[in-house]
Length: 393
Image 1 (cartoon, rainbow, N blue to C red):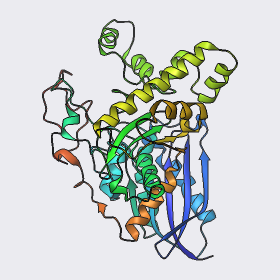
Image 2: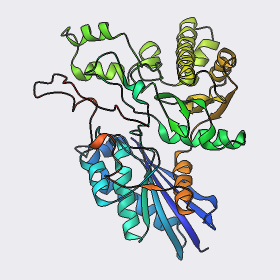
Image 3: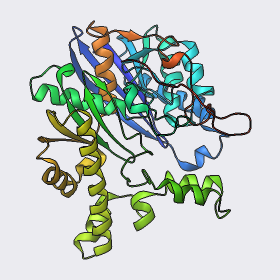
């Protein structure tokens, strides 16, 4: 079989998901094959850090594509999940050696998603193909007014599940026969982390930003009372890493119930565990409260409420959200989230000419790469006044 193909590389903490899509006349996208490469835990103990895994993963990725691509295939482009980049607009960023190096060696935070850019760039370069990263979590299109926090030294900033949110809202626009840029909705990505965000004019104009006002999730604490947290920081009872883990990784459902599995929580509740049911309902309560808050950003004038991500497979949860929020707008459920397909679709839109690409580093917003949590501190670790983010959209 010959033809033209788009390859996708999606690097997770314990997996690398590879996909091959065939395209026809730059219009039709078809899944040719995909595979989730599992990485055993003991393998990663051999590496001093995430960036050191790149050569190991590259060997596995190349072997997969070599095994599955037709001999006379033409690879037009390789797409990857964007890593922990500085604030950028939504869209597809053209990969170059500078962006590949930044993602690998100097990202904002160390995360497996940072490996996608260097892997895609290496594979594409050897195939004489284009390469891109799509809608990283650093997508920042929130409005100037949404950045105001109440403390000038601590402005709000954007970290959001942009890829799945934008891909799912495109599905809603097709369902409602509306242009993507005309849709006004509240989109909820519900996975290990949650992003609840209003979308208008094709842009994510605010969000709960994972750890600010966000509901708690299967493993994250979400927004917690700041004064008790402040006291805990200086109590001497916890190290920085211990507190961080309480907020991120061992918070949420896990902190209360010892499991991150929503199905397990629901099973316990059905079997009479009243506390499990209470905590599950508390999480739903917080999701609905945040949906209402984000609907207010759009003056409660919305086409719908979108639920997506793995947790959206939980029927009780989605039905309760619909029961509580349907007076605002219809609730549309698109469970799961096919990141690889979203990346390939974004690449195809560029190849067919319906979207433009972004160039690195010109696409970095606010004039420079700013780390919202660290670059605002002086040499003594004290927050300093900044003018981050006050810009027009």
